Every structure is written in C-alpha cells, then in structure tokens.
Length: 164
Image (cartoon, rainbow, N blue to C red; front, side, top):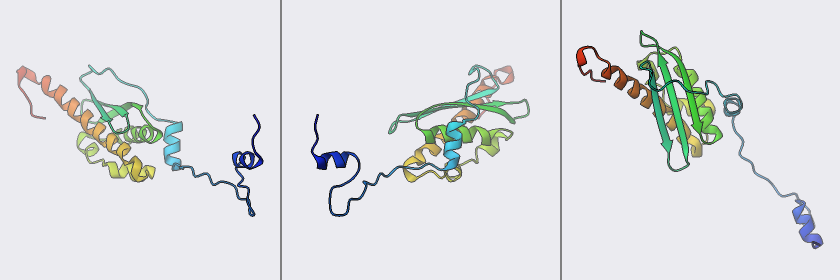
C-alpha cells in the first residue's frame, strides 16, 4: 500500500511543515520503588487458609478490577512471623502488596493496624490515580487481622466466645 509523503512522514513521527518537529510521546513513569517491588515482588505465595495461626484478607477494587489476597502468620505470642500475598492487578497494586508484606513482618497485631495507606502511597510515590492500590493494601491488612481474630475466637477454650 502506498502512502502519501505527508502521511508517511506523520507515521514516522515527523510533521511535514516548515519546522518539522517530532511528535511528543508522553509516558507515565513509575517511581523506582514501584518498579523494584513489581520486578522483584517480596513474599509472593500463600499459606494454608485453615491454619489457625494464619489470617487471610481478600479485598478488591471494582473500579479497576484489582484483587488482593494478603495472609499473615502469627507465632504463639501474637507477633507476625511471616506474610504472603497474591494480587491480580496493575503494577502499583502488586508493589503495594509487596510493601505491605514487608512492613507487617515482625510486628504485633496492634502495630500493623497503624499502617496507613498514605504511608504506603508515600513510600511508593503513587500518583493520585493509583491511590486505590495503597488503600487496598491497608484494607487487606485489616481484613487479615480480622480473620485471624475470628479464628482465635472460634478456638476459645470451653466454647466461650471471645470478642475480637
């Protein structure tokens, strides 16, 4: 197929005029922290959801289709000894999940509940359009803790119900 010279130049990125200038291509750049956690995600995987020492948080964002599963594993003293995640979503969601699993390790239940989405967003330098990813990570942490507390309440001695 033959193209007119003007169309051919336009396809090559040059506008045919007195001052030919290349088309500007604007790309969205991610912060190096996002790229690092996307290219090398930490703690990918899962634990047995039926383990009484594992809390599982499953959250999603309907507006973009991101789904995040975050699991935390507790030792006998209430400290989180390990964390895992599986995320279906964009690079920012994967990076936020990875950061969340790193931040919860070695902390108590009370300490991890103080982790806020704004801290994750700031660490990853997320743009406003990607803030929902850090919100998902915070929600996943809270859901995992809630699930763990429910499991512990179900296992209370003598069938007593413990408020979580």
